[in-house]
Amino acid sequence: MKVKNYVDFHQVEPHQREIDARLMNWARWCRGTTVPMTSPMFRMVPPPPRVRGDMAYQTAGAVVDRMDAAKIAKAVAALPQGHRSAINWHYVKPVSPTRACQAIGVTQEGLFTLVRDARQMLLNRSV
Image (cartoon, rainbow, N blue to C red; front, side):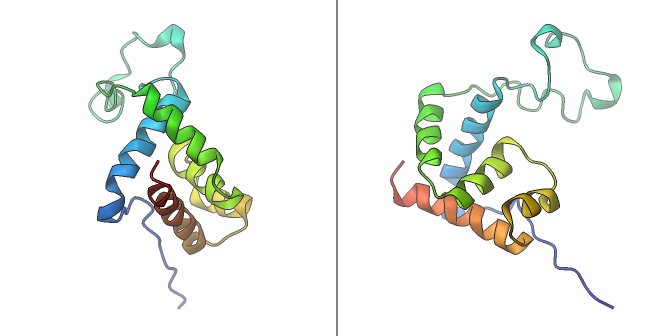
C-alpha cells in the first residue's frame, strides 16, 4: 500500500514567526477587509448561526497596518516568480494545495519549500 506524504503548510519555523505575522497583515490588506469573503453591502449583517462561533469574526478585531503591508507588498513583488506565486497562494488566495502545485508546477514538498524560502528571503532582505 502506498502511503502519501502530507505537508503541513501551517508550520512556521520559530525564527520566521515575525515575518509570518507581517505577511498575514499584508494578506488582510490585499483582501481589503478583515471579515473574510464579505461584500461591503453585507458586512454588518450577522452570519448564520452555524458559523457565528467558528470563523465569522475571528479576525474582526485585527487592525491592518497599511504602511507595513505596503512595504511587504513591494518586497514580495521583488521575489522570484515561483516564490512570489507560492507566497501569494499561501497568504492571499489559499486554494487547495493540489491546484496551487499544478499552477506553479511543483510538488507539495516543493510548494512548502518555496513558501519557507520566500519567508527567509524576506528576512534576509531586512524587509
